[in-house]
Length: 220
Image (cartoon, rainbow, N blue to C red; front, side, top):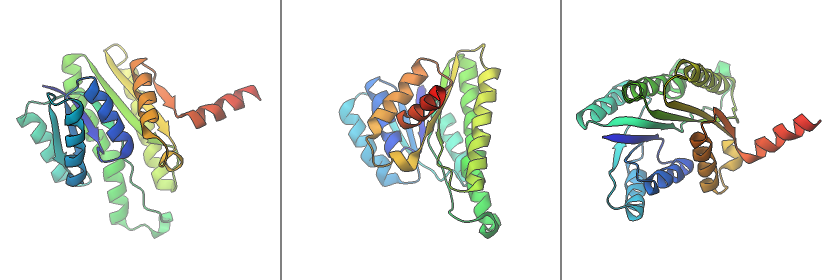
């Protein structure tokens, strides 16, 4: 069964994306560490489409064992990922020299290692079907050097994969978002912009404030 896999499904933007794909009749697997948030979201989505498969799965993707169990869960249920939405960022507000090795490991595991594993698993399904979409919500408000390095790595990975799979019907989109500035704004409009950009097969997209800055620079 084809599914849209969303992580972290408990975040506001992820919830709005889930609503869009529910209306568009896409089966969903919603993943988050917060099971209560997932249950509440599932109930809300089933009101929009009671006949849709909306599955939830509690997982701390920083933990490799839990992440592997997620992959086993996908196989057992015969879920095939045709769309991956990765909307996860983890940052510890400390100077580099004050970070413990354990804290560095946590940031790397969530922001990079889990991201790579999820993309690999998704591409296996997408490559077989010769169809798929990967949406990476990329934060531009990187508050620490390590977080900035995490984000830069993920951006370059997506760009490289875009070239590698350009002859297949697999879309990749990096959606740049200043999460701290947009946190209290209407997340629905950002979700719509991301989906529209993906549907238009754009490789990169920006939220409106950043687009205005880019346009102003061009005019100068």
